[in-house]
Length: 119
Image (cartoon, rainbow, N blue to C red; front, top):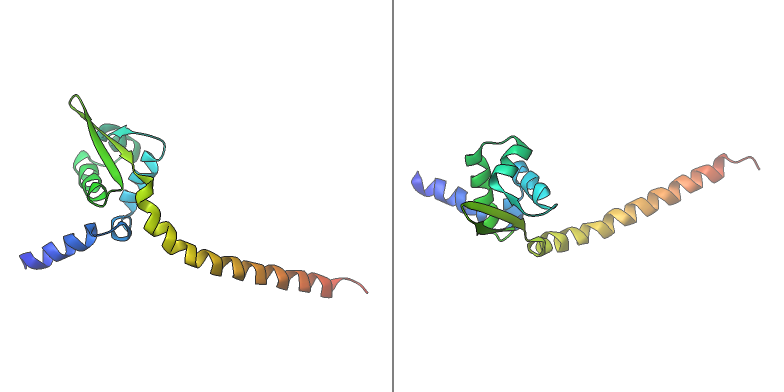
């Protein structure tokens, strides 16, 4: 049973895709997109408990999406956007398919408009 919990935990933190699968982690990344924040500021911004935020920050740190630095007793976190590259590259494959579909829809709508115009 303990092994099963370890495997699930390992899968969660193994890569960027699994790390951002959790909505609160995406919210934290959004908050950090504006700049460096202390844990307390993230707690206030997202209305989450400090232990929840710390847990999510640990997962995000393990995959390299955020970095932490100490400033006195505070821990400041910042986004490491370069680590999102695998996600961006994966999505790029689908972007072309989406664009092709939208182009076909646009062509279809133009054809419908032409058919509806008086001759």
